[in-house]
Image 1 (tube, rainbow, N blue to C red):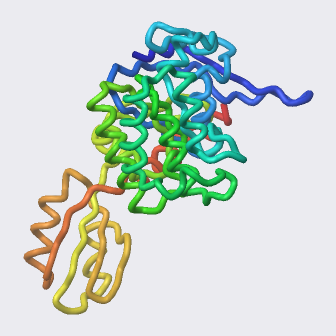
Image 2 (cartoon, rainbow, N blue to C red):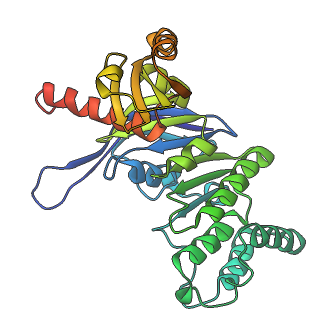
Amino acid sequence: MIRVHDISKAYRKGRREPVRALESVSFEVENGEVVGVVGKNGAGKTTLIKCLCGLLRPDAGMIDVNGEVPFSRSRRFLSQISLISNTHRQLWWELPASDTFKLHKEIYGIADREYRKRREELTEMFEAHDCISVPVATLSLGQRMRCELIAGLLHAPRVVFLDEPTAGLDLSMQTRFREYIGSYARSHGATVVLTSHNMDDVQALCRRILLIDHGKLIYDGGLSRLVEQYVHEKYVSLKFSGGVARARIEKFGDVVSFEKEEVVLAVKRSDVAAISSKILSQLPVRDITIQEMAVADVIRQVFARERQERVGMGGR
């Protein structure tokens, strides 16, 4: 279990005012839970991950990961976590990835039989047989990330920190990665904390997200509740059997997009049923689809609202 209570972290560069990367952040993550940490560049996501895995010590507050204090970097703590990041390299650059795997086997004390089983399973999963026997320096970013994933999961960690893990992976490999991480979390009861700009990663893996903005935790909860809490509209997509004048459409809602025979309207959630009924009775509708706003758009709205509130408070 991960417990984070009121942690803060600031960076001081020269004589400038300290930059607050995290400010009074608190949350808990249960064993076996997969949680997404979402925010814009510079929001504090990576700083949070580094504090959780012990690479940084918070200036204030407390972190407990399975009964261990991360920045103590105890052997017991390090043996049960893994950090997989596209900026934090585990692999020896001049050597084949397979040599790093052997090193990890010795460091983590993995038995021979178990090591062979895990390595083969992971290599097969990430289609890395052709990558692991050549120097890491010669690999593409996508190939290197596949090998990083294998190295990070070889010791069957109980807590996995993933920082932009699908960067550089093609669409097929991204899908395989999500499937494996989801399966790994379920079968091992592992806790996973994921940061990603790829909302497909977050939606596929995380029932719960933490939104970080300017170092502050502004939302902690499920994706569905986020939509209900912050979005008061749904999209009504319409296809017509003939052209319809824009003026006839605008009275039903806000026009998001308009083409000759296809229109998307934003309609208040409470009015969707009534408005849809009116549209069907008054216009030559060939097809109608009602959709929630995309999660990425919802999150952009949340951040925009937070920015407006800060401006209204004088930037505090």
